[in-house]
Image (cartoon, rainbow, N blue to C red; front, top):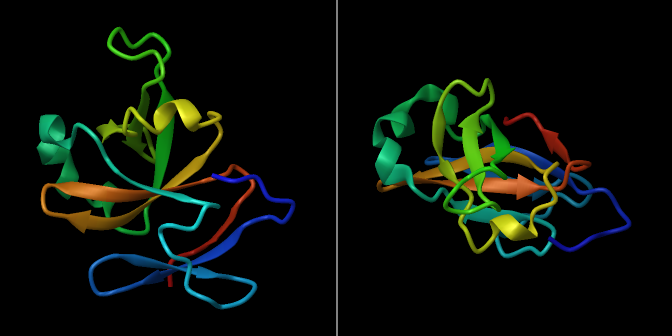
Length: 131
């Protein structure tokens, strides 16, 4: 995610199968490749496949990113939990986790076959309620 002097403001709009992103200032669609955001697949879902269908991971739901510096396999690991931190779905991909600062926010965007796509934004980003 590229730093910006202007605070990112996004509307989350419900689509047929997930959530679309719209810039709140311009009304323009925000593409997943936009450098101000990250859209990532949840890694390790196959180990917790039963969690994938839980409503707390439905598109538009806020998620918790939980760093795991004591993780024996990867000290940069960042777990992805539901907002209440009662159910873990998986992890931020290992190639992306070291780039995070630890205060980012996350939202479930889109269910895909056997997985989930998650939006990760800077801590100061404004995210409008899914509509």
